[in-house]
Image (tube, rainbow, N blue to C red; front, side, top):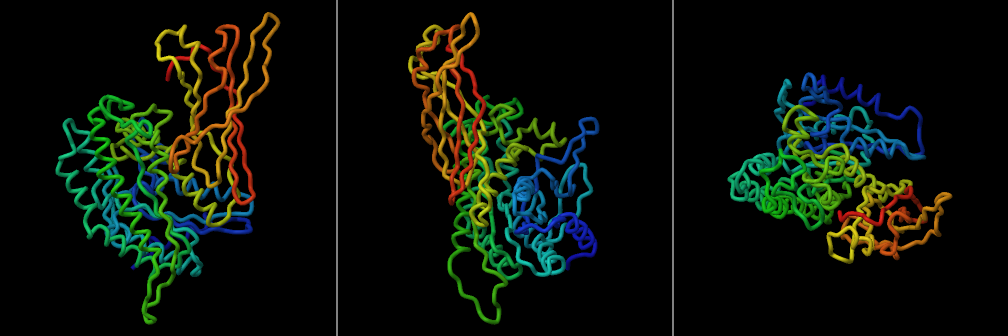
Length: 468
């Protein structure tokens, strides 16, 4: 039974969440699930003096900075759209102990409690506060706690090979079991029978163990020393035996959920939502793993977690940039389902490198062409990326800019990871000290007759560019 204290809290949330001015279309968005959904690792704020973090719901480590809320806010800012967002996610949640059943929270430095089943909370919301309006998007992240992934991380952070650790073996066996797959079946059935939902977005778990699509983190390539016990072999094992198989189970559950089914007239479903598996994070996190630089990585290291929330529970969870990337995936899917305005492409990062002569001499580097690689955030439109470049000549009476030339950049990655690369023609003929090479990125997205373009500022490259 949904308790009165939750009803009072829910009414307060509802009053704040409903738009003050009616928009052309208001989307009701509800979030349920585990720590990835709640925002573990990315609290509202943190006080380094007291060592305490501030959370929207402390026992659940639910944050105002989670990717779902960021996505809702982005949609809410679009012309002609508004959102009503409700979040019941809770760190530590499992399918049967969190979504379908009660959950006893377990957070350090917090008075923990027993949370009502999240599906009960959503049902109460829909029946008593939304007047049975359909939920446009039900966002779910669930499964990682069912396989006890936290113990896998702990095992791999301990010196020694974790691939044969009992916690890792238990996780891999659970993922392969029919019991685990059947739990998703119960979740699908419960949502059909109890909730009125149009679309379900169930998100996969990110690839958090790579520097780039082909290089695993580990062997002291760790971002900071707190992750130094993890080897490249352990990172590879974690992805291939835990993260990817877990995502495969979720993908299979979504396929089954969308298959035609028949129900008895005496027990008809309340809704037949369309299920979507958002697997994008498995690829678009792949160049932002725990071993990358602080300003680039999307995942918290152990040290990051201690500095950002005062405990270790945020380790291997997305940081703020990671949750923004998470929001990209959600907004991209919502754009397709609800025909939202096409958002401007975002250039996430640039890499400048020498190609050609393989030599360490700076003099020989002058003869090398410059390769530019850019990453574009996930976008629902078809992307075209152009590299514009010019030569600036330095003279006694000032600098003069050469003509701007354009080179198409090729998509060098597959899946949702948008990596575009191109060499700058003639860049091996730049005269050091007398000339400077400049370039900028023009990224254009097109979808259903809409076009959105972003153009960066010019960036300068010296002829003596060091290999990166």
